[in-house]
Image (cartoon, rainbow, N blue to C red; front, side):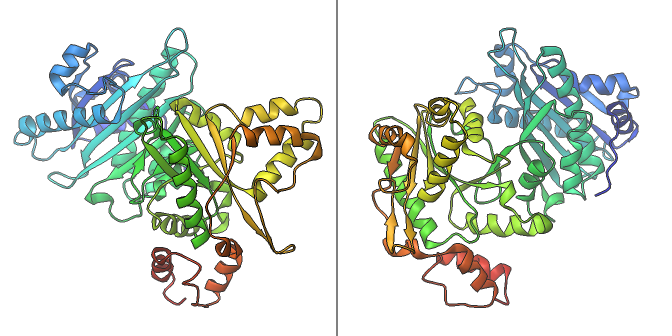
Length: 461
């Protein structure tokens, strides 16, 4: 993919000189940084109809309405801003500017504070037309700022806003280029962990690919989406709630997968039902599990099959659970449950034991088994001994058997109580190989919803 980065000043000037592009800027928090770039580039009168900022909560509520959650850096606030400003734009300028491709840019930003208790994040959105009276489209994203002082974070938001507007008007036929261009001149300064692009002008591609592009081009290490392919953000539904996360290859999800999801999640809810929480189950697909030579096709295949199970999904760059736990800690969840097969758990324990024989073994395990995390271990079938391997009988290094027993007794490692023994014998890799070779007798091994997806994507199978 040939790509040449364009400087922020040049982007802003090109937009200012593109006569049909005309719109409003509404920015809350971190200053009017996006609009400022267009003013400084020159010829801003060709682009800017209005700029505004309502810092005071009373003023903001009077314009956009109150937030029941009392959180103003949130998704709902951004959409209220876009709705209000777009309605005004259409009412006031539609007749006087019939040839304009209108836009409304809005953001609500919380930059890093003096005491560093707030790291800096925000929501940015652009509602726009690509042609006069054409379809109304939208780009919305969530950003985490990585600079360590307030001024630089404000500057980064200004650059990101310019990149958004330029991407939407100059790269609308190339979604991957749109995504990649968002961090022009921002290397290692921001993390974009949610991106939505919608509207009739963008119906030509599968929107789940946006999540893939964010990870592929390192705009983020984690991004999430629902079964319909719509990006979601953890801050909007995980804060002080409970999450169960299931990492897997999902090629294909089998009846064993479904059995593990249902039984583990049911046990997780029972274990935490004393707390008034919303419980969520999410499927995690690590980026490294994808076939890199056929990346987009493999991603669509796996996520279509995962979506058939009906749960939210995550794609991540994290190679181990510890990094993922660290990422999720920002959302202050009350409970986090990880589903790990006994064979994988055994490998993790052996690896930690052998790499920490210098006396750090207790600290190494303490990093993984923190207070609010429970690991649910799903059993596996042992062909060699013709038996079931469980959390109680799996191999453990002798030197830490006492520690492992403690983790079991304290219920930080929890054996899954209910499972279908016969389903443990299903081998997903062998099953997929058989499917690709044209064997169709597999209804007793995969869910019906997954079978329909396979037959849709591979009609000849």
